[in-house]
Structures are given as C-alpha cells and as structure tokens.
Length: 155
Image (cartoon, rainbow, N blue to C red):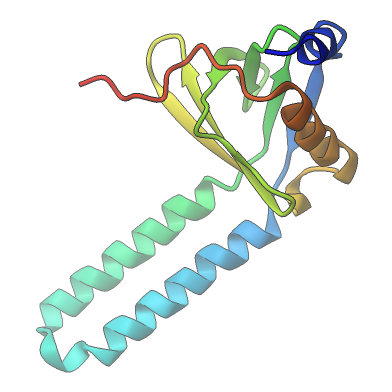
C-alpha cells in the first residue's frame, strides 16, 4: 500500500450508501423472464405439457424471488474498511471481498460476514444518488479494496 493510500484511508470520512428500489434491476429481471418464457414457447413441441407447466412455475418463482431482492438497504463504509449492512435498523458488520466490481454503470459489492455467510449487493446508478455513487467509485479507486475477508470459499 502506498503512502498516498495510507493517508487517504486515514482521513476518509464514513460513506453511507442508501440503496433504494432500482428500475434498471426490475427491467433486467423482467427481460430475462420474457426471453426465458419465449425460449420455452419455442421448444414447447419437444416438451410434455407437464414439463412446460413445471418450467413456467419455476420461472415465475425465480422471477418473484429476484424481484424481491430489489429492496432498500443501507451500507456504511467506515474509514478502517469496516462495512455495516442494514435492511432495517439493525446493522451487521461485514468485510468487502476483492471480487467486488465497480463500474460507471453498476457495482457488485461482495461481502463476507463474521459468521462466514456471504452477500452480494448489486447497485445500479438509479438506486443510489449520483453523488454517493461517485464517492463510492472514487474511494474504491483511491483506497482500493483492502479486504481481510478472503474470496476463497473454504470447503
């Protein structure tokens, strides 16, 4: 780690990300649903009626589960690289994994909790205010992702 990164980490203020409902996420999930339904329709002659019904039920349940993931969430990034995640008023401590991806359109933040559980958070530009999204990108670029949570999944 360079001296510049040490200084920026030392003086970094906590970053609170208030993630809200994303229309982009909803549209992507619904587009995947429509394309999947279309592919089932195209191959319907090769499947039995029972198989088609089971596939549609599975597809509908998977879509509903995915749409339920589009929820409000609060993320708090402390200057010591500790993250706190909350979907209500209870914050849980987590570490950001190196496998996280930050782009100009979306971010995928992969977290590992103290109890070993993992959670990925997908952030689009439309479910966070522009200034917070910019601050997240800049802070990751300047400080990097210094994770104590290893990305290797232990058997």
